Length: 92
Image (tube, rainbow, N blue to C red; front, side, top):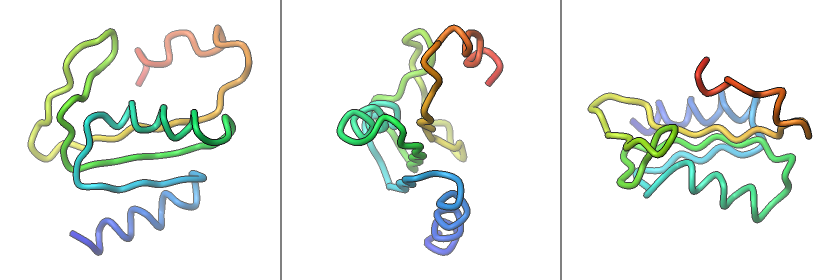
């Protein structure tokens, strides 16, 4: 597992300013929000975990840990006009 994580880290480090790979967390989304809040708003970041115990989806839906699922959150800087991103979560 370690070698796969190291390769993932190396691949993603060429794309994102910050890459975090951990065993578990409450919520990758909450973690990324905290990282961005306490650093530069122009920080692009990626966090993935094996398990999360307080994950949630869009509109407050519960996010279950399915076996062999990929749990991650991506944080990217956005343009000032959020209306440009309307519907992005539906597409993803």
